[in-house]
Image (cartoon, rainbow, N blue to C red; front, side, top):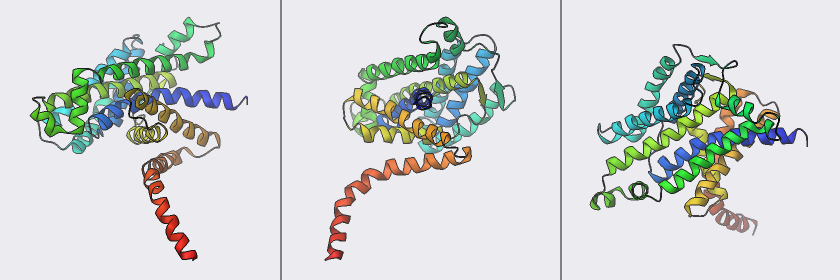
Length: 304
């Protein structure tokens, strides 16, 4: 039991931080119906900006700075799609490639930044609650606060006029045009907001582990997609609040699988394969379940 509790807490901390990226994908992919492949680069951008700001002595400013950088990344991606005629998938790939160079430049030409002696948001909070019963849970407190704030904002945002327009754009863009709503504007706003969440997630992860490397965001779009699908499998309600909770639950469950795999000494290079397998199961699971009765009938006929 003593070894399971730290394992569970680690998975919960990482799951909550990565759930911010899952919430971003929930907005762009599920609501806006845009598959944003710039997620990996935007996550690294948020981590790099957060690290540089913290190293320069501004840990609290690192959060709005990272989110602002995410907004800019989302704006450029949306601009390529809506104003330059670039396909959404290709726009994400182009932006992700460009962000690699941008992130290296932000990190001062280095591929790795160390923050072991740097004051971060986490160390600030740790010093404030030092000596209390929550002293060992400072990472969990920050991650939970960030997720609650983002989830509440997203829930309220999607009920506003612009939020409803974003949802309508994802469902039926032609109807949106006929209703005098500009789908260009809704796409830009949606991607700006979603990318700000992704950058915030990267910023918090970098400061949590006190280091950032150029590959910190590698595979985040796969992880976020898997978490999103896992969450929708466990919580099937169409109510917005429950769907948002499902994305957070999916992120935690995915990270729990990751953490357990590492606990059993699985090589780090195998984790990408694990994430791919989880995505395949999450996507094909409902389909295979629907086909099971037909398979059972065929099996029964063969026995006869």
